[in-house]
Length: 179
Image (cartoon, rainbow, N blue to C red):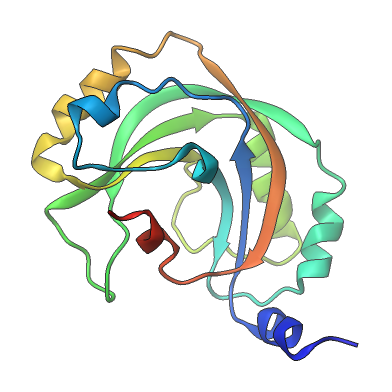
């Protein structure tokens, strides 16, 4: 029998699945160069596999699928990019962005497609696997920051990923990262 807390968690709307970054990424000197930036702590670095606002698939069903997937896999860093920042109070701040490492991995794509195959619907037009390095970064400094990071990435640099996180969507989770 479910506890009340478990019932609330299970009945919440939306599914969220991610995988953890197992490789210690280079520090890139971001703390020194951008001391006021909201840099993602190492412990929170992850790759979102699916963000599905419209579904309410039982976590057990998602877990059953995830157990059929490899426990560890790799991805290649293919670029540095700026994405829209997480909106606060439902409105985007056009002056802010997130600085991310874009990834290429057949494993990530296959797991994403498999999650869609069990009924999850990705809430974004495209699946763009990435690791967010900085949240709420000034958009007018993004080009300099992206070049700064790109200059430190070796061609073909790979990272290791492991462990799956299978949850209901947690609203405003990025707020805990803000200083």
